Length: 127
Image 1 (tube, rainbow, N blue to C red):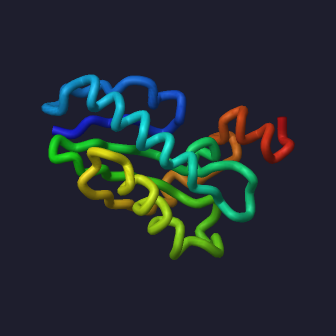
Image 2: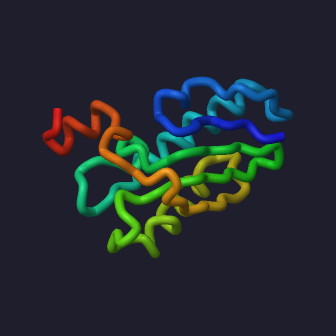
């Protein structure tokens, strides 16, 4: 069984909805730490982290402690398209209790600025 931390918006990341074989307090810690790790990864052209930018579409913490992340980029031609999945894998892979990470890139739905949190909007001067 997997536990979906977030789907489509950072605001949905508050509480995993599915039951897991991982103890609830441990799952909450891993979930919080995964999100914190994602917030250390920045798009080099935008002064905001990828989580607040809304580039993370889905995070699943599986019972075997593997983390699956579905994400996008601000544009398919993003200059760091080949590098960013590795940055995400490295950041999340360093979280205590995570045994592995896979990152899937998608452009469906395409990213739009309305996916950004207020924090990201402030950082780029749009708020």
